[in-house]
Length: 131
Image (tube, rainbow, N blue to C red):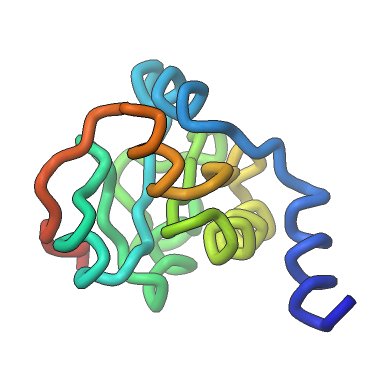
């Protein structure tokens, strides 16, 4: 096992990961879906309607429930589902979000591509990221 494989396994050991259908249910119940994919991928493949587009570089500042730069309305009780292309980078990001104080942070198994393959709604991509 490589170092990155160990890092990923450690991150996932702390997560209750969700599949596309469960992610859609949680979003309908008020969970925040955070899309960390690059803009080029979002333009080419689309976006999850209602997701918050967030560059990975600002993730920790926007998802710190006690921070001055947190998303509006974000609390330690907020369920956050992080989405990347295939569910690898999102696992690492979700583990970081848990360490910041979001115990209900998780990620989407299979990423955006699994969402799309499941036939769930997809919007045209290219939305700007939250600053």
